[in-house]
Image (tube, rainbow, N blue to C red; front, side, top):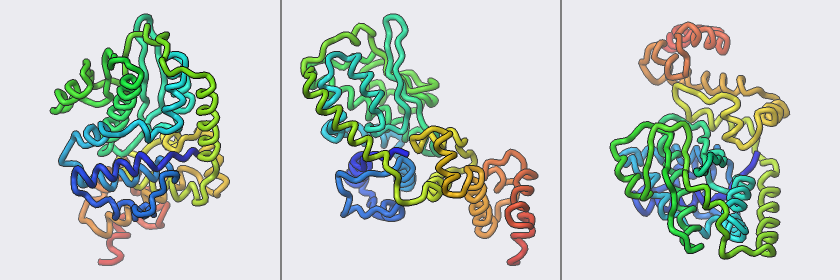
Length: 338
């Protein structure tokens, strides 16, 4: 899997502390990160970063615009060689193509794509699967962060912000006016993907800082960064997958969605798990089993309610699975300590 710079997480937790007075240290510690030792050159997996954000979000739920506010102050310097490479391209088209090719160096929880239809072109963000309670927060973070990045690039290149329309893939929120005011263009909610639409004629606009020599240098640096981040991690993939799955309630991601979050193909994802002696289904069963036992031991929820919380549409399916895991029914498990 591909790792990513810890800079985005470092910036986010710092802003959360400044703007909301929330101490990020406990959430970072639970992920094995010492906030006083966050090296700017350090890397982190998407799943581990998501686990920290999920932990911190509990105290941010009172502000549905938190991700928008946090992302609006992210500086272009944090993108390093990636941003400099794009600025050195000859045209907007070339910049977009390289941005997509090297998107692993961005801070997105989405897959970046590009579309063109006649006079309109669009950057498209396909969001990764995240826990439902984090869905809007993560999308807002990606959309606002991408807008901020594009806006900074355009400003530095002497071009005005020229988005024609921005589409956001969740229902229209009560705070919809804030988005139009922030982005300065039409905003459409309820789309299938996040989209930044603009006039296709901009694709051929030459960039004033175009420099083939600098482009080659920064591209070489980006290649080296990707090579470093694609090195195997020392901790087991199985442990990271279980941590990721443990964040979900009710609905769980498919193996394809999980593989995408870990920046790898489904085939490679299956192979890596197999090399560690596990399958995705086994890990999912382990997570569900542990959650089931916790709920049976610590709540008075009915078996039907617990089944729903674990993503089962019928209690009977949950009971069959539980008997397979523990050789007893949920009711028998609960009665064992009574």
